[in-house]
Image 1 (cartoon, rainbow, N blue to C red):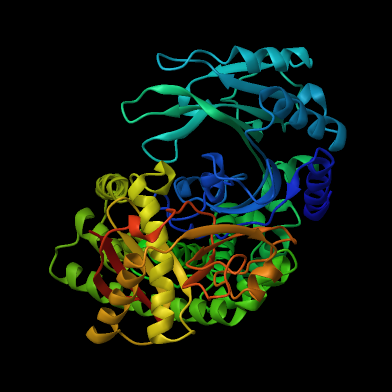
Image 2: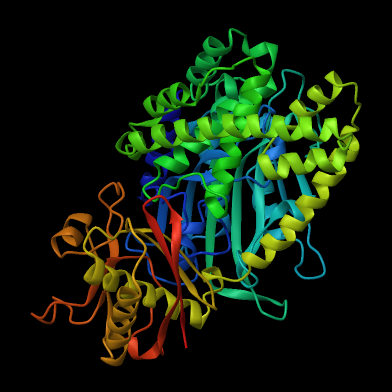
Length: 589
């Protein structure tokens, strides 16, 4: 089975169950500071999981672009990836456990024809907060599943996305991938059992004091990893042997004059990281390599790919030729990659050249340390932290100089750095839109006012390139070539505050993309498979007034009802985000 056949089967099955097909959202979350990237299908749907009405209805189906770097050290094995595609079906307060479980079982066994004897499931075991999920267990048993494991929150619980909000147990489906006989007992720790489907049963709301209360709107959020399932369907125990990866692997074999079997780990890491980089730069909200936030993660992925390419013996520039293979492979499903091809190619070439210079600087610094007899594990880590200088090269060059560094001591330094980074990251990304706080909602509306005010002052070339909102401030990235003058900043600020003082109504309409364009709405017009979208209008609405509104923008919400709820708007900082992109930080007082 091909990936396209799997997607089509999934869409058609759930459409036959009254689900509406919606398009993949951006990899760069809008107004959600809880994550750097869209890590799961649920992230773009958080407002609707919390009660906002979705234009497409209560039952949805899609394939979502996702990117996760939390388990980047696992990449290099047969099943883990940073970028991946997640097939999902959704119930927004409609059907619940029984239908979700039965849908997943029917699709896997009747549509995909997977052997029932090779399937097993896990359910939530319960703890002091929430009791065991007996309901799911009984449903599984009623349809003939006997291999059931009971696992704790670490394995069978989702959420909330922030400190509070919707959450609940999940029940996962595993497939036996080995040619050996299926064991009588299901052991989730046995790596031959591969998880292919996750049913998240969103039935609780976690309160600020840590209590779990039943949700008024119970939701279903499911996910099936495309890459893993495709391997299972084709009898493969290695995702990288599927049609999604083989063209990339073949190009690497050509570039390295080596075979995949010679060094599977390096082949996988290079292929995975460059694919992720292509999707991040080719996204409608595409980003460039940088020294912080999403751009920093992108830079790390590219440079890590270059490091492992060197282990394959690839000394020449290779990123662009590999990126071209990836764009050609995915451009039909994700036309934005072809649209943004020049940006992807240019940024990859620049980053590869920049990293070559970094390597040269790192070698000079390393030689200085050796000459002064100062090279140790701590300094080796500083070379990595400052220059991105690979450990493998440090160890190799140190050995040539007759020095033996301890890799374990180096890793201790690295772990301390990781712990500090995680602590900082946890502080940076706590709270957010996922908590649906009153202030976050106000900042969401203020962002629309800011966007239009910038267009009024600077010109219609201004387009949003990212935003990050929490309960303390908003951050807005936009297209503009030059730093704003003090006069321009003041003018934008005054325009926003004027709209607040005018007490303008904020209204929402559902319409097609074509209708939104016709009405002059701004925003990202992603490929939408013809579905309806939400458009928020600030000021007179054309359906009730002939006067033009101040702002009309595509957005999922939530928003205040009137601008007079916002308070005073104040821009605190205007700075560069990346080449051609400016960033504003602002507060409501």
